[in-house]
Amino acid sequence: MAAPGAAGQRFFRCACFCSENFFLPRYRLHVRYTGEEQLRQDYGSILNKAGCVSPEDFQQVLSELNHEVQRRKQLVEQALERKATIAQYYQPVQPQVYGLQESFLAPELLAAVRYCMTPNADLTGLFRRIETVSGEKKIYRMPIFTQDFCQMLLQELEHFEQSDMPKGRPNTRNNYGILLHELGLDEPLVTPLRENYLQPLTAFLYPDCGGGQLDSHRAFVVKYAVDDDLDLSQHYDNAEVTLNVSLGKDFSEGSLYFGGLRQVQSNEELYVEVPHVLGQGVLYRGGQLHGVLPLESGERWNLVMWMRASVIRNKLCPMCRKPPQLVEDEGYGDGFTQEKGQPSTMDVCT
Image 1: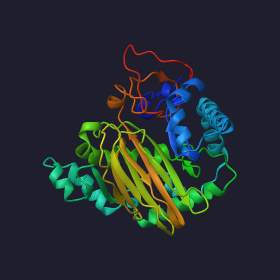
Image 2: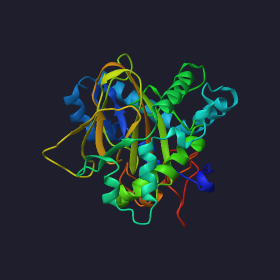
Image 3: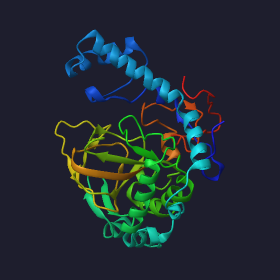
Image 4: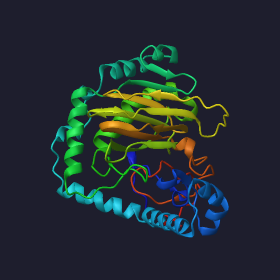
């Protein structure tokens, strides 16, 4: 059975998890994959132009994709095993971060939240309390954490990273990072941050994509360094609203950049570049195409929250753009809930 999330609600994943959004780093290409014939038909010419020219090149692509399919099929079971091992054996170095305190939060965030809770609050008033990076693209920025908390959290994350504990990685594009639910930070830290401090803002900022009904999330930390992951090609998130917070370290360049919406075609793409500022978070729609410019020096850590609204995604999976086919998952899954009369399968991926 799917593991319950907050308040006992069960969350699921869409079956497209094992067929959609595979990333091929060598060709910097995202593909759909159900088999060799489909891949040749849909992407053969695109791969050829990208440099996949020999039979050996194509076989290597098939091998990578089949390996990733198997990895995704085993993901739930392995994640549960890692989480249990960490809970039993890991000793935190900064145990105070395992519980959200208002002293961790920036005064600007607390003031904006208090305003949103007043009877006469409106969007115009909120705009006076946050920075609008792009009104057209609905990208906003504001302080989220204090610098002291960023330092404490970063110490904890680096301690865990250097430990011999098993580690799941955020996704196939970020090879260096930490899944916060496996570390045990979801319930005490991330969930109250979303419910009590972010949703009052997103309800005003993103009413059209479930900003007032965010009931789950996937939270992780990504690490960029000159000798590790250096940048990230343009993509969209499996989320209704995303928060990206800079946790710090010494680095240069590596800014976020934003294009258009995934579902809106544009011949003249205007990009917005957003530098990272310690403790500050950038809020944007999950469907907003974005990427990370190359890091020139140093090391950078960011906390990323993909926030989801089941009332929105239950109608249409944002990854396959079809009504979701529910499969069992653990924790918050991918944010889908089972509506009355809607079937699900016990298989993680079919």
